[in-house]
Amino acid sequence: MVDYLKLVAEIEARLAAKSTTPPAEDPIPAPVEPTAPVPDEGAADTIGPDLDAWRKDYIAKEQSTWTPEHRQALADEIAAIEAYRRAHGPRPSGPPAGIDRAEVFLLISAVMERLGKLWPSGLPTDPQWQDRINEAAKGDRDTFLTAIREWE
Image (cartoon, rainbow, N blue to C red; front, side):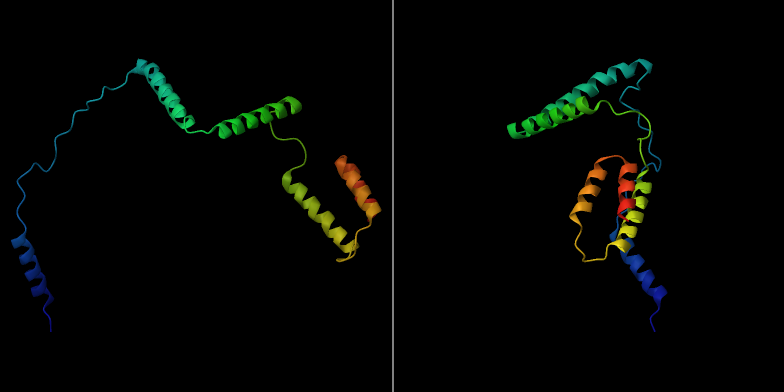
């Protein structure tokens, strides 16, 4: 039978013999005095320009790697965004107008369920009704729902 206490004692003795005692140090180090000045109330004005200069340098470094094609693609994208904004006007503040997205999906699924019962799977569509439904879809919601009800 192995005597574990004896084995642990031997291991501790070997480790103690191999280790050297470290030089005596103060267990609690002395506090280090800060070398950077503590900003006062007026220092907020001096931080801004340095940060702006850093941002400008960073942007300039990033833009130095752009190819002419990349620059042209960005310019085209900005022009397209500006043209869209001119055509559609500014986005109004507040929640978007219209039907809630969840309500839209519920209405679509209800209509599709009703149409699925009316129009068996595999049966070709009627081109005349398809044209009427497509025209109604270009109008407002009530026109579209009225066309669907007529079709049903």
